[in-house]
Length: 184
Ligand SMILES: [Zn+2]
Image (cartoon, rainbow, N blue to C red; front, top):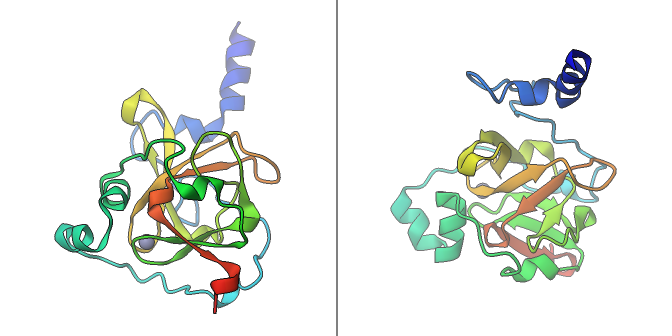
């Protein structure tokens, strides 16, 4: 029994260990978990990489965002599954933060997870995402948000496809999609 318990504890890993107590450990990138860059997306180097924090008052956010985007981005709400047209979006293009326009995800990394939320197995660049531990609703999850404006995007889970094994479960209301043909 003890061997089984220890084995399970090792498998569960140090990542989960930090959930239980005190401040979560963060890696060198300042993340609570690794967000791998799977491959350079063509053109991402030329995108807006200015990560200077974007700060607005609650009133300003309320004015500039749709009520659904405000609920998700600024109040950590969750849209109803299958409610976002971006769930079924299959065109080539880039998904930007609806709050500050930072490029966050690329269609190359999008897949149909069957959950009803737009799902990706990688971010367009790890530095564009922030994360934190989220223990709401009695669950242990990793929340992801825009690194520039702090807007809540969704959560990341470890049941995604190769090559990362990650599933970024993102609220479509937090995103603005720009098809490739409209870029530049
Ligand atoms: Zn943002």
